[in-house]
Length: 449
Ligand code: NDP
Image (cartoon, rainbow, N blue to C red; front, side, top):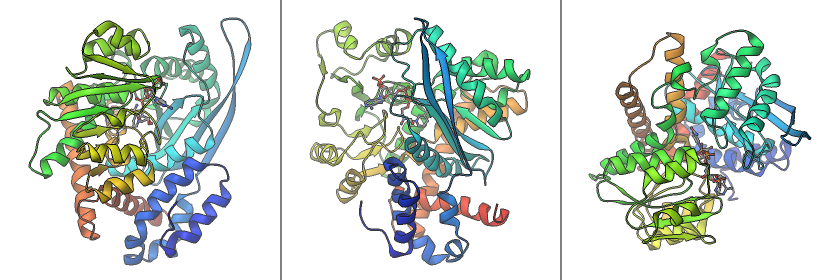
């Protein structure tokens, strides 16, 4: 990692020492600290009040055993997490990730990012994140249900519509939110819709929540293009992943006239020069829960499955990494630059490594960090909470318009903050400083708590 401004280097060293072995968390903190020098110089009262030290220490971290019985009758034990990071702006809000790679460092990186992302939405939500090192791949529906029920049997005592509101993330979609909500309802004997977001439409969910992260990322890209007098029409786009974020990013790109030529899962990537057939991809991924190679078998000529190699070698105008952290490295960035890519927008959380971000910046490729570009998911979760609180449900068109307006607002505040701090066009600086000042001001107002 590069050396930081001296105003924050000591503090970063302390964060690393206090949180050993949590590389992803260190990376997320470093990325934010790297951009805060100008705001700390202009407003020294933030440093004087110890805001940064407090921001890096979660308000509460819960780690728990998740025992469950698999279909063979064997006992399985997983580890569950909920990190309630910061509630200065509102109740903790952030998704749950079920993936074997989950450990405290991953949840803390995601929770830390979430504080800033949620602030950018302008909605009253604090930051948190949770999950488990559970691997849902290959598990039956009944096993998924038993796992979710056991997970919620501990989690329920820590959450609530005014306290902490989880949602989905990798490995947690509508099915899992259903099982989690069912168990919460059973244990508490309360139909407290606002305790989880990402619910089904007939039981308290919001229109557009399923689509929101992917759609929102593409709305952000639309704003970036518009700032340069361009549109998505006719642009080549590569989207990594083929989960919730990726599928709906592809959908919105296609609706806006773009041409998505590649997407992936953890087994490899597919290239389809005729444009990804989204209906087929959704059938394979959402209904059959199959592997991406099935797409090539079914779609036939003109398509290709690449098992090893990088999806970022596929020439494109716009790249939307939407799978997982650190999936686009410096070598990938160089390939994108060489092939003429002009925009990278993070649908996933921290998919681009710091040296890749540096390379993109040096080549003047527009780069939208996840905390800004993928904030549409949590923003629509907050809209779901609004509907639950008022026992109302809004139409698809109205909710989508609210999402588009929020994404425009985030885009514009990133640009105007970057301008204010002398870094025009730098979305990373704009997002970090704009979010930091909102959270820091609220923390100052609330005193040392
Ligand atoms: P899903 O579980 O729906 O999809 C994840 C996709 O990424 C799958 O295609 C998966 O492939 C692939 N993937 C996961 N891990 C790896 C890996 N180690 N290497 C390569 N591919 C991998 O998750 P989401 O779409 O919900 O989340 C994707 C990203 O977006 C995450 O970073 C998440 O934090 C972020 N995000 C999600 C939001 C949401 O609303 N869902 C909101 C904001 C951010 P496979 O099936 O083979 O594992």
